Length: 497
Image 1 (spheres, one colour):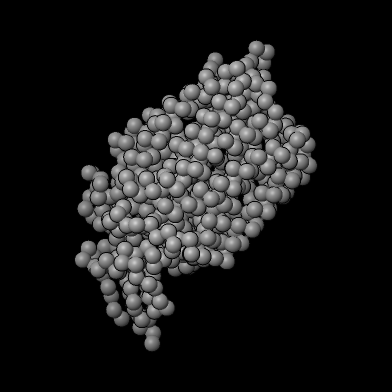
Image 2 (cartoon, rainbow, N blue to C red):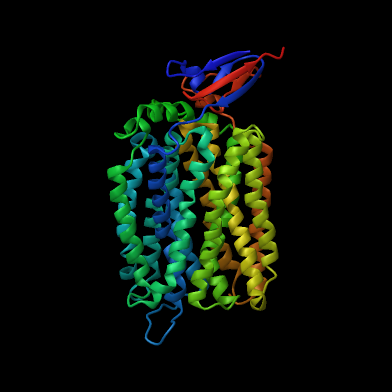
């Protein structure tokens, strides 16, 4: 039996994740003395960045109801039909999709901190212009601003993924990444739950744009001051924690200068499986996110105050489950109960096929069964959290050095298709009070979940690909992928030949 203690002097080949060894490979991780460190502070900053980013994109979904349906005499409102509202809701994705690949390249070149911070400043200012743009019922100007919001928010996922690839050790990847991305649900909960109170205030519906813009602006300034692109860029991190993170990420310090292996990406079956999984999740998530307020108001006959709180409930449950499911995923993988690949596929299946079943059941509910409909909706959206331990961290599994550009491609493609989701609703749902028309929408979404997750099961993998390595070394059947390597990790190799 041979023990290998991985230290700072370990060759790059070993640290990058590939080593030619015969026999069985077992890993035993020593206790990390940095139970809470700078990486967790950075994760917290990114968490709030996700939350306030979703303030900027979800506010229109909450505001569209009072903007088009007066609550009291004298309220300012606009007579926009269902197709116009769907057009407004989908216009965000036009800019969002276009920004993805450029955002990934910018984050890789200049770092996620600068790109995300500046983009959020711009998005915040544009958001606070929405009430002015809507004056006089000019939905075309609103659509234009939503496109601009999409362009600025398009940097969010590629930038955060670029940052996480540097900050999230493999042994904590599910927990840290899921915790950060759960900020999306946290932000959605807050903005939807408080929207009714904002609408009832003296500010009315314009208040939701003023408040969300101001909060996001404050965060962006804080992030530009205290954020860091990587452990080596932090001025407060200890040497022990820095080495621990760098050895366990698999992302080289020279990754900014590495050319993106486009040919390898677009000929990689696991990457296509990942794209399919992200497309399925994104279609379902945004269909529900943009249409739940209207569905509750028109079909379930819930008033605006109840609508706001109940619209937030599914995302609150999703946020809680993110924090529960992710450590379970890490535990199962770290203890070798599941391989990383099996774990990613299992949790992605839970995160897409349980919502699929719930949507089918909810499609048969009417206003007399509103409690059952809300229950199914909450379960369905809530269990979406499991997919965060599936497709969402898979970019870093496949290639830590190019996680940002990979996210820009998969997120761009997923949202390119998903921008049609609100348009499909606008085409199918002519009478918003007719449950049978909403049933068609829910069946379409369930079908997307079914097919996309099946493709991930067939083609998905969770091992570092050969094109991630700076030396571009090929893998072979005798190569072993070391999934957890660090200064405090021992690799135990037991010969079995």
